[in-house]
Amino acid sequence: MKFLLSILNDRILLPVLFDAPSYRIRLKRISFCLDTGSPTTYIDSGTAQIIKIPFNKLNVDEAVIRLGGIKFSSLLMKNTNIKVKNDQDSLYTFNLPEIKVLTPTSNTQEAKNIAYSTPSILGLDFLRENKLKFFCDVANDIAYLEN
Amino acid sequence: MNEMFLLNKFDQDIEWFKENQKKLEKEYDNNFIAISERKVMAFDKDLDSLLNKLKGLKLDPSNMFIRFVSTTLIIL
View (cartoon, rainbow over the protein chains, first blue to last red):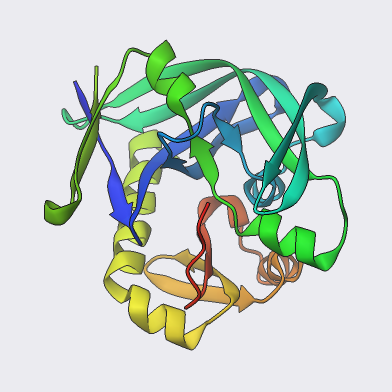
């Protein structure tokens, strides 16, 4: 089964519906940027704000992540799902037992700007856990994941 | 709303952004833009202010394609 990816501004995007019933988040649209250079999958703080993730219900992860020169706290959401369209024009659900949500540790405008312009990332952990292969032909605007 | 309908609508907005990217980057340089139904519904330099504008327009930001556009290249 293949899952088509969009190449936008030389970034590879996977549009999904994000579902986290235990946090009262139902079917929210998120576009993840596939980053094979990232070991971990996370939701950026701008998206977290847009889909109204309740930060007070999340556990603080020990890891502090540095991105674009600023520090982020990492919070953990448990038992969430992403729904993705496949090449048979039906939906496939991936379970994410745990996903990080990033929030900047500093409240300055500069930190906010960097945090909000950083996309949500689908890292190598997602490909590994779901046994997905990644195919990309940028010159011909073709990219997909396959299981 | 049907899940497939939501995803298809999302795909259409992303595709529209892709087709109009250069124009949008020039017009809304260094702004967050909210796209729905192949239109820019609102924009602002600050995400919080954009979300307030959308709230004022009674639009749900989580049903939109919101993106920071800039002529400056952002490298992760």
